[in-house]
Length: 267
Ligand code: AMP
Image (cartoon, rainbow, N blue to C red; front, side, top):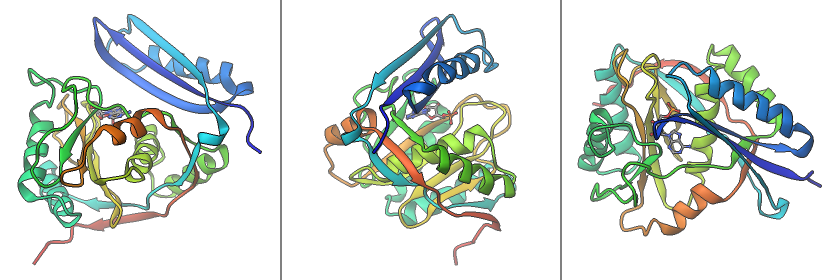
């Protein structure tokens, strides 16, 4: 029997620009404490002063909350972002993304995928065959929402990540997001690197390879980043967008966290 659960989401912005966002799924008794944590995060993220912070709380119907497992994580050592992007490209192709589609999505992220070369607030949707972009709004993209870990799974994950020196919010939150994306009908793979200028790591995630992290997918100091979700060729994205944005997922099983391996060079 699940307690009454709520989705609580924070969004901080300034002059219409997105600065930071975070979200949790918590019991009613944890709402106030969680709201205070999210507010603190909005006020201390270091990317400029937030002029508007919104905190939204929605009751969830327990019957509709899905359960899931995190993908296994491994890190592939790369010397710099060029090597990282080459290795990420190889993985996307192995996952079933056409080479030209993977390359053009990567170029879009590298040059700013929003109109005018800025950072999108959400993800690009890319047809894995043709490379066509399918998100209805190229500035907003598609925002994956309403996902979290159970308290027990969160603790277990932190223990496993600590052993690998990876217990930070970037990795924890990206793993949960990737779990929801990977479980979505019609998603072939995900590519991500952060828009945080000081965080150069990124990942490729797919059903076959799990979550493969690269310490460098962009140069230090680069403020551009984003996400691309590659969809089965020909898929109509409407149902997928509804699932990613609207359905709730509580992850209750943690995947393996492997140590660092060297890049496998293809023959
Ligand atoms: P972050 O890893 O938080 O630095 O986010 C990197 C990029 O991923 C952002 O610039 C957005 O384009 C995208 N992004 C962030 N959060 C989400 C989300 N909840 N759903 C989809 N895309 C996101």
